[in-house]
Structures are given as structure tokens and as C-alpha cells.
Image 1 (tube, rainbow, N blue to C red):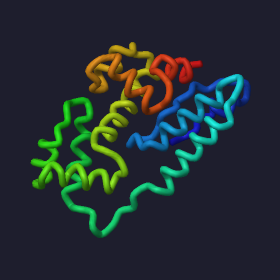
Image 2: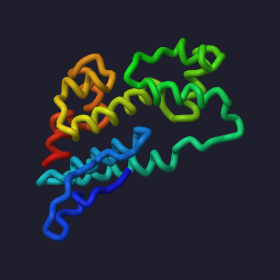
Image 3: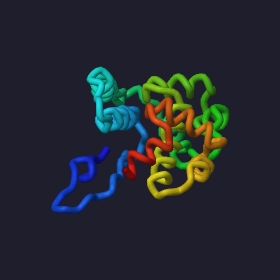
Length: 176
């Protein structure tokens, strides 16, 4: 995650545009920081909301699964497939076939090494792509379709659950 100069206010009489999402992998910490940013922009800040976002961010950094000797070699292929094809439907059976192991084993191993489900991982990847498109002023419906969501309402539900704000609110924040 990269803090833009716009977050720090005008510099030398110029106001730089906000580019809020710079992480490449969509980890949960990015979304915790976006929720913190949202709560800090309010006129009346809720200290509890800010503290929860910071705690979630730090907890994610502390509890992030560490690579271990027991990490299966096939897991890299399973991770790469959604990163490259996040716009397409992802199936556990396809990932298991790619890895050459049982689907339940893929799911459990992924969760153990990533701290979350494959579905959550794909949603975060789609969210990052949608955020970039929204920042580029694409329509929400277009951003949803190009990011692999079924429709705009699906993107909105996922966006709200991950970031705590709607895509339109994100757009206002990014360009406000």
C-alpha cells in the first residue's frame, strides 16, 4: 500500500489526485486501511471505528501465515491461476486438477497458507481491478463486468463487505 501525497494535503500549492489502491495482491490489510481512511475523512470521527481498522490491519500483519517447509509445491500453481484469470469463473475442481490433488486438500491447504478462502482471494483480486477502473472514471456497471463480477449489484455487495463502503462512495473518496 502506498500513501499518496493527496492524503497529506496540498503540496506547494498543487493538489495531487488520490490513487488509493496500489497493492498488487489484495490482502485484507489494504481493505482495513481503506476503512480507516473512510472513517478519518468524516467530519465526526468515531474513535472505535478507527481503532478497529488499525487493530485489524496490525492483526493481519502479525498473523499473516509464514512460509514453511511444509508448503506444497503445487500451491504456487493454484495461486497463480486466479491471479491471472480472476475475471473468469474459478472452480475448485479446476484448481485441484491443476494441482493434481483432491479439491478438499486444495481448499484446506490454501486456507492454511493464506489465512482465507480461495473465494475471498478471488474477490479481493476483482476488487482491486474494479478500484483501478473506478479511479479511471469508468462506470460502475462497466467496472463490475470488466472485473469479473456477475453484475453491478454483486460488485457492490462484495465491495461493501470488504471495504465497508459502496463503490460510488469509493469513487467520491478517490476523486473528492
